[in-house]
Image (tube, rainbow, N blue to C red; front, side, top):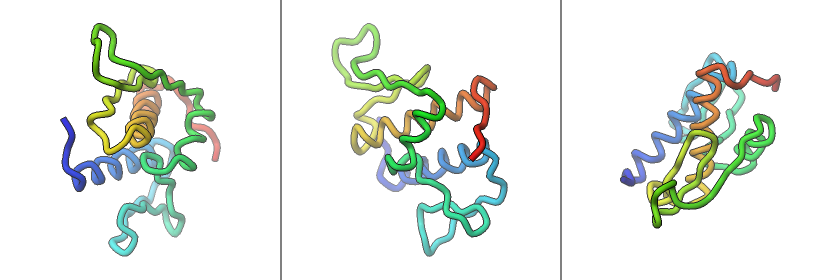
Length: 121
C-alpha cells in the first residue's frame, strides 16, 4: 500500500538517519533550510534512498545483489529482492526509488543483526 508523498519522504529520511547511526555517525540533525538533508556536524550525509550516486557504492561495498521479478508463488506483482528484503514497485514512486529503499533497508537489517561489518569511510 503506497503512502502519500510526505509520508514516503519522511520514511526515506528515517531510513537514512537509521543507516547513518549504524555506520557510526553520532550528531545527526536535519535543518529546515535544507529539508531532506541530514547533517553530521557540518557535513551533509548521503541521500542513500534518493540518489544513486550515494546508494550505488553501498551495493558494491557490502556485496548486495538485486534480483527482479514477481514474489515466489505470485504470477503478477513486480518486485525486487535484495537479500531477505523484498520491495514492491507499486509501493514506491518509481522502480529506482524502490530499489534504493530496499538496498538501504537490507543493509540496516544486516548491520543490526551483525551480518555485515561497518566499513571504514
